[in-house]
Picture 1 (cartoon, one colour):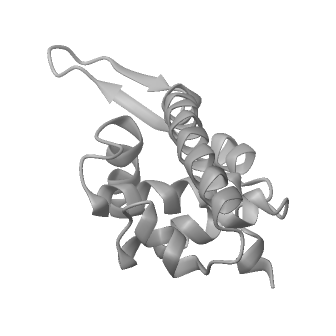
Picture 2: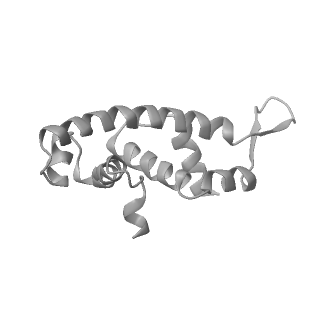
Length: 131
């Protein structure tokens, strides 16, 4: 329950308010897109909303929150992928560290760059985990 609460807070606000939030958001994104996880989570996770002013508790579809998160994350990633693709065109033989530093990412954000590089290579965001 506690972990679910943290994920819920991340996917409902402050996607990129800090480097840590960015890393957490990327991890959650990778988990959601991995294999068929999103569909599985929509089937097994229930969220309830209570306004606090009456006794009514309403069931809320998880997709209301994951949809917004996925749209925002996808738009953000497209912008970052464009920047990285341009760097790869200008400097095709450079290593991951070069691209990470040129993008202004910290060491903590290494997995994000690795995921972007995998996508640009046509392998998919999580390909380096499947090896």
